[in-house]
Amino acid sequence: MNPFRYHQPTEIRFGAGRIAEAGPAAASCGTRCLLVTEPVFPAVEPHHRKIKASLEAAGIPYAHFAGVTPNPTTAVVAAGARLAREFRADVVLGMGGGSSMDTAKAVAVEATHEGSCWDYLFFRPQQPTDKTLPVVAVTTTSGTGSQVTQVAVVTNPGEKNKSALFHERLYPRISVVDPELMLTLPKSVTASTGFDVLAHAFESYINPGGSPYTDMMALEAMRLVSGWLPAALENGGRLEARTWMAWADVLGGLCIANAGVTLFHGIGMAMGGLYPHVAHGEALASVYPAVMRYSWDSAPAKFAAAARIFDRSLERLGDAAAAERAPEVFAAFLEKIGLRIGLQDLKIPEAELGALAQASLVLPDYKNHPRVAGPDDVYGVLKNSHAARRGKR
Ligand code: NAD
Image 1 (cartoon, rainbow, N blue to C red):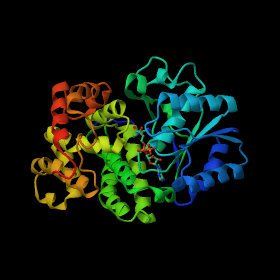
Image 2 (image 1 turned 45 degrees about the horizontal axis):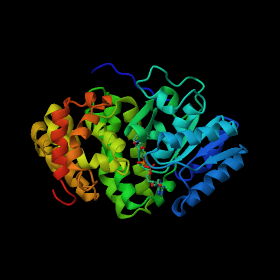
Image 3 (image 1 turned 135 degrees about the vertical axis):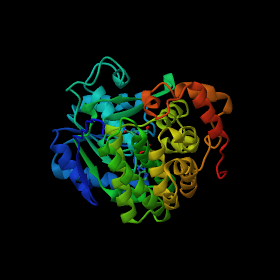
């Protein structure tokens, strides 16, 4: 076994009804709170009422920044940071999907540092200092795992680039995971965010930088997604299904915080930067089978173990034979959850695949893939993914 480090500073408060603890959690980290969310819409209005009631019950003054957009931009973060400074917030409470939680983290940096959050991306010389405001995260999707990660994904539309802040100071101090909040998720978001959970688990599992600790959680997350994501799609009001998906999401987040994603996410992030209309989980779904076909034989035991979770009949086969079947097994699962899509379905022009391939190798994620790709490999994968249209196996 290779030596490894496992670190996780976030306190996790998990369970139905625990949204009531969001206010006290914020009050334990600061005295003036910036609440960060998307604009209120009918489905999530009850969640907003509950979180505000919990802030009021905790007696902590708050200002509400309700300007988050999916795939949040540098301008969104700047507006949130402005309000944080004006209000003199000393704690940031993000409620929503990855977009809201990541905005909260980036605001925690920009409100307290010179320049923009974009100046503190993971590869910059200057990094978030101890002035960074504490963050409390309340997730409403299952999900990105952002409630337990040190990552904040931000898009810079001017540069057509989606990148990330990545720093230990961005771990939420406290994370409230209340599966009741996910009962309102529409089917399409349940599917795309649920697939993101699977992607986090699978990619951490095949990542050579993983450990027995992350492997254990990744296998469990994949097992949970295989059964409970279809159940949540069949009946979105079933709390048991939402609960297990919320737990799978936490496990996926714990995995990526300590192992990390691979080429699939490198491509997915590039797609998000160039085509902001594409949901993160859909971007991943569109390339998964082709990237798996390109790389299954680089880590056959791992691809085989993952495939067997979704198709027990593969237990009869040896690792190489089972691993070779992994792309079709995942494609079948994508079909089952309504996400067997290609780049054409996402309106990504074939003529732009070369630029997308180049952009996919900007973030270092591809270096953690068990088979390290060059631009031609990625172009080939994208060509194959382009053709795989919705409904076509
Ligand atoms: P999201 O936050 O953009 O939300 C997707 C949609 O679902 C939105 O329209 C939102 O209004 C709606 N929604 C959210 N919760 C709802 C609820 N309970 N009921 C009804 N509707 C609800 O989506 P996401 O997939 O959670 O986050 C995506 C972002 O997170 C991307 O920018 C992605 O790159 C990033 N991300 C971050 C990490 C990380 O570790 N920080 C990891 C993976 C992805």
